[in-house]
Amino acid sequence: MPKLDLRNPIFHDDDAAREHLEGLLWPDGPVCPRCGVMGDRITKLQGKSTRPGVHKCKDCRKPFSVTVGTVMERSHIPLSKWALAAQLMSSSKKGMSALQLHRMLGTNYETAWFLFHRLREAASDPSSPPIGGENKVIEADETFVGGKAKNKAFGPPPKKMAVFTLIERDGEARSRHVPDVTAKTLRESLVTQADRKSYLMTDEAPTYVKVGREFAGHGSVNHSADEYVRGGFWHTNTAEGYFAILKRGVYGAFHSVSEAHLSRYLAEFDFRYNRRDMTDAERAADLLRGAKGKRLLYRRPDRAAHA
Image (cartoon, rainbow, N blue to C red; front, side, top):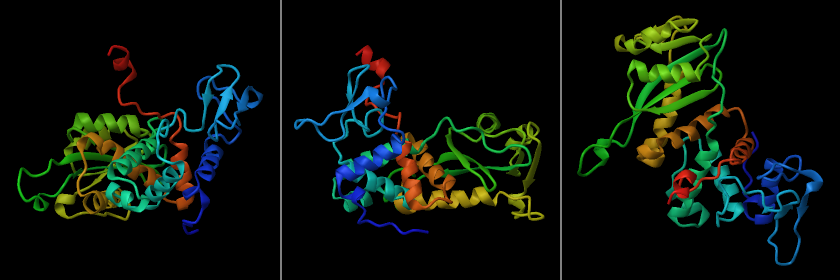
């Protein structure tokens, strides 16, 4: 696998980083983010008072750059730092804390926190189709994450937050933060994220008994009786392996995560897991592509209109 070359200009030169981003988001040339036109309807502005990378649409007559409509829009953080942060997030199997990032980028902590959470938003893909299908096996399992009580000198123990994960063997993962692990809650995630033509594999929890009948087949192993593999086929070890990586990130890199942002952390770990066969550079490029169409606002537009 090719090694990361930190001497790459995209990590030090903002013009090189912008051209790199344009190649990823505009593979066929500049596209107006407002009306979607391209080609000869787009003019590149090159005046002395114009910053590099600005284009103008002849239809809507609005200027734009490659960051408009992305999580990077209106950010004052140099694009080279965005590129390096994306590379570091994509290369860190168990994640990287904002404290570590701010030391490596030479920014303050708030900037590093901002960067990573915007990139986690870029990693999310709510339009992903259900996993599994005919002759496919999907493992379903749940776990709890949160800070460890022994690490707190005083105060109540950290809240344990439920995470429900579906993993297709030799395929992708879908993880969600759920309010509880009842049959009703888990069924909603199962039937929306998994193809019911799949064979469902779980542990012995009774919450899976009824929903298991909706799938092509349902098998389980009895963890409470120390049964973890039966016949080489019946197990949930793929899901357990995913949880091991997730928890090493939560406890070892982040130490604790906020419930308000847990879904974004799960999107980050799903993103890396689902692209585990890519090189680090390919994974980072995919992460930057995901920034498109995900501009984040401090206030929801409907609320701003009534403010």
